[in-house]
Image (cartoon, rainbow, N blue to C red; front, side, top):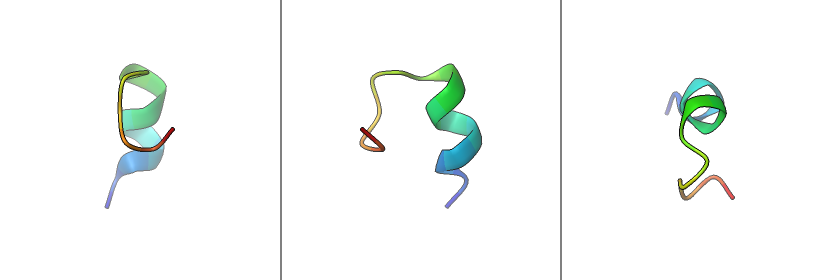
Length: 16
């Protein structure tokens, strides 16, 4: 998954 880039734009993600 590309959560690495998404996490930067979306703080409200499951990456947290």
